Length: 463
Ligand code: ADP
Ligand code: MG
Image (cartoon, rainbow, N blue to C red; front, side):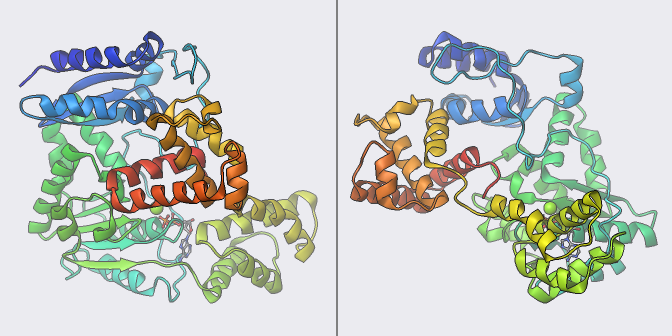
C-alpha cells in the first residue's frame, strides 16, 4: 500500500497542474493528510469552511488519484478539533474569488451548522417524556419509545428507527428514552451521540491509534442512541465501523435507536446493508403537529412561563406558526421576551408586532436573484459577470443554468423576470435551463447532492 506521504504528493502534484499558485497555497494551508484507515484516506481540514471549499473543488481530482492507488482508496474529510485549533492556531487563508489570495476573516458559521468536536453529547434535562406532548402526528413513535424505555433489555422493537423533518421532536424522544432508562436502571451503559460525533470520535481514535478503546466503548453498550444517521452517508470507513458495532450489539440483543430526516430507503446513497438493518425492527415517523397539538404545546410552554399568556393568544399563535415545534416554541419565547422587556400585557397587537419580523424571516422570496447569481458564481469560481454574458463554454453554461433554476425555486419571480436578470434572456431559455437542471437532479444522484450543497451555499437558512 502506498504511504500517505507518497499519495499526498501525487495529489498535490496533480492539483498543482490544474490551479494557480494562489489557489494551490490555499489548498495546502487548508488541508493535511492524517493517515490511512483500512481503505480510506483521512484528510483533515483547518475548519469547516476550508473543508467545504476543498471538498467542493478538489474532491474529483483527489478521488481520481485514490481510485488509481493500490488498493483503490476512498477519502473522508474531517475538521481539526477546537482543542487542537486553539493549541496551534493557524492564520486561515481562504479562497479569494477571482483574484489573488489574501487572508480574510472567516465568515460566520450558519447557525444550523454542527460543530465537529468529538464529544459525547450530554442529555438535555428538558427532553423527557414528561415534557413531550403527544398528538396524532407522533403517537406511534411515542408509544414505541415508551415501550423501549420501560423495557430496555429485550423488547421486540430493535432497532427503533425514528424519522421526520426538522424540529419535530426526534432528538427529544431519543433523549427521553436515554434519560428514562438511566433513571430506572442507573447501571445500564447508555451512549447517546450524533452520527457526526461518532464519526469524529472514530477519526480521533484512528489518529491516536486507539481503535481498540473506541470499539470497546461502543460495542459494550446496553443501549446505543445515534441521532441523525443521515450524516453517515459517504463516509465509508465510518460506515464500516458502525456496521460492525451495530451487528455486535444487535446479536447480543442490545437496544439500538436511530433517528434520521428520512426513512431508511429514502436516505440518498445509504448502503443497502445498512438500509436493510435499519428496517429490521420498527420504523416510525414524526409528522408536523396539527392545530390541536400546537395548542397543547403552547399551553405547556405557557404553564412554565412566568408571564400570563391568555388562551386566545395561544390559539392565535398556534394558527400562525405551523411548520414545526421548534419554530412554535421560538415564536412563543419571542413574544414573552418582548412583552417582559416592554412591560406590556400580551395581546394580538403585540403578537403581530413581534411576529412581523418572524414571519418575514420565514417567508420565501427574501433571497434575491442578484444574490443567487453572486453566490453561484462564487461557488463555481467564475466571474459574476458571466452570469449575464452570452459566452457559451460549458464551464459557464452550467452555473448559469443552475442559478436560473435556483432563482425559480427560491424567488417568486416569473420566467421573464429571471430572464431579464440574466442578461435579457428569453423566458423559453430560462424554462429550458430550469428543466434541464431539474432533470439532472432527478436522475443523477451525485449531481443532486451537489445541487443540495449549492442550495445551502446560496441560502444557509433554508428558507
Ligand atoms: P428534531 O430532532 O426532530 O429536529 P427536536 O427533538 O430537537 O427536533 O425538537 C425541537 C424542539 O421542539 C425541542 O425544543 C423539543 O423539545 C421541542 N419539541 C418537539 N416535539 C415536541 C413535542 N411533541 N412536545 C414537546 N416539545 C417538543
Ligand atoms: Mg434532532
